[in-house]
Length: 409
Ligand SMILES: Cc1ncc(COP(=O)(O)O)c(C=O)c1O
Image (cartoon, rainbow, N blue to C red; front, side):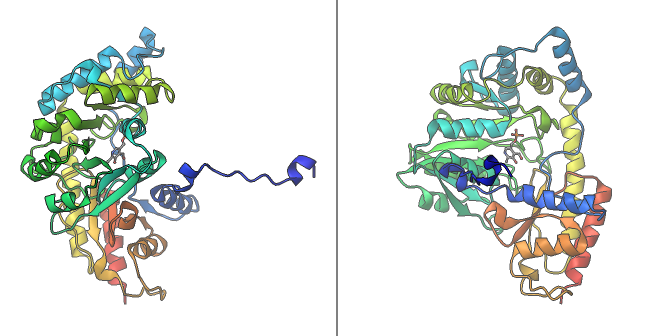
């Protein structure tokens, strides 16, 4: 043994990272994939990405960009052509008008959110997160020195935040309210009328900014009209960052393009953050995203119809399983079902189910279906299914979940 290997040097992560665990979703998915590699027929319903391919016209646009030599750094927070495509999208879909310097383009909506919080949070600033919420929100808030303030939604209220809850959660330290509609993980969406009472509260608290995460905008069912705060209440526009991206609507998760639009001063501060991290989003991916946003849009509605058929199937199947209860989500590609009715019961192997995590562990170990416990998203006892997978897989998975519930003693 050499001197170098004899000394044990322990790496100590920085305090800002220590507070954050490895994503529970990744941990469950890794475990499920390890079981699969060991030959077990596990069905993984954890993925947060469409199972469709990126549309052909979008892929062609990327190939053409490479051929043209669009292979250099672009303007740091998005090429002028990309920003123009985003501008067009906001006018066409949301009746929102933004100048090009009110638009920021990043490597995914996640980076837009990260830039916004890095650019705006001082230590101890609070961010209100209606629960259940996308896990990354809480982690990003903490990395940026802020304090996540979860506010639990109820099934009775469709997992939507209500005005009284919002009023009670606001303090002088509140910097942001996050609104994600349709939501990951609950699928809940706000209509313009449902946003109004929240906007009324916000108008009384000018220190609170709004981050509207609209990434699932185009996966909205039953003909519901999409609503976003900056359009529903124009007086909030001067303190709203509207975030969106191409990952979900155009099945482009791997291309890493997201964008945000909001007040010029915020956008400029976000550009400072981006200038010292990724410099700019990929030039080729921007060319693809321009085609996605400005090219034919029919495929978006077609895929949404496919997702709706899967939603209907999964919700009906879950509601047939003893002990489970699932409300009908308005959008996104997730169900968020209650498993309260199976807690306190025993598996045939003698395990007592005490929590949603126990139930999910049981589903994976004994029935080979991987789903994510609600506690990961700040609300228990629930579990999330991503139905962005084939009907054949969903049918098999739902049969196994039903059998798992029937097997409880
Ligand atoms: C609610 C929500 N916002 C943002 C994102 C990030 O999307 P992107 O791929 O654009 O970074 C996700 C991805 O899962 C999400 O679920």
